[in-house]
Length: 300
Image (cartoon, rainbow, N blue to C red):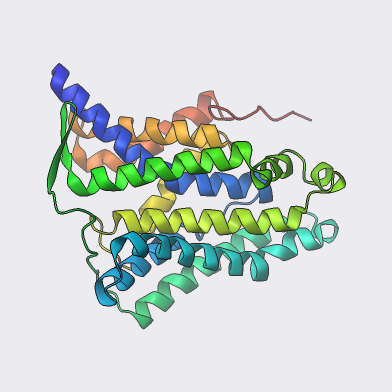
């Protein structure tokens, strides 16, 4: 039976975990909202960020305050290259794609995922690399909870980044352009918004956020070629739970999943911790398939 202190501890840990999920999932939601595709290589951007932070900080001796932005820039640059070379044909000749558009996106992003994993495996090696710690404190008291110092430091950075993303999307010109293109790409183009530049920005931003998530968690989860697999799966689950393309939905669903996993690991079993999200996904697909903030599709 849960005591009040234990419940508070689990809730705090669940919310912190949810923040990390949100950093990954919001980028995926942005891509779907603007390009209407699912990026199956999203986990590999996480992996690139983990390696970039580890190599830059541990091997090159760059200060941590600069290593984290470097990891973000690596992910953003990779996202920009992928959008320019692989994604742009989707909307550069949108009228000629027909029903093949979705198939192209699935095949290309899945192939990119395999390419990046195998390239890193051969170029760097299959062994895990431990990243430098963000702070020296091993344990930190957060209200009623006793947490890992690494998690607390990473959570504070994540919270600041998510606040900046919210401010950017709400008040900046490019943020309003992103929201306009996600609502109606053709209408936004007719209004003078460069939808192609918005798509490039969104893919770069999503890649940077995923890479930053990998960098922040690399002192806890060591960098390896397949380190992005589980974060990517959780991101897909979160995007569906929140509503495809909904940024507020992705954020709230991230916190919800973190809390469900935290309580489920204690009340049921820690061995099944990664299955609770899939169970939650099945329930949503059965009873609310549009997600928390999604719109129900019109039946023809």
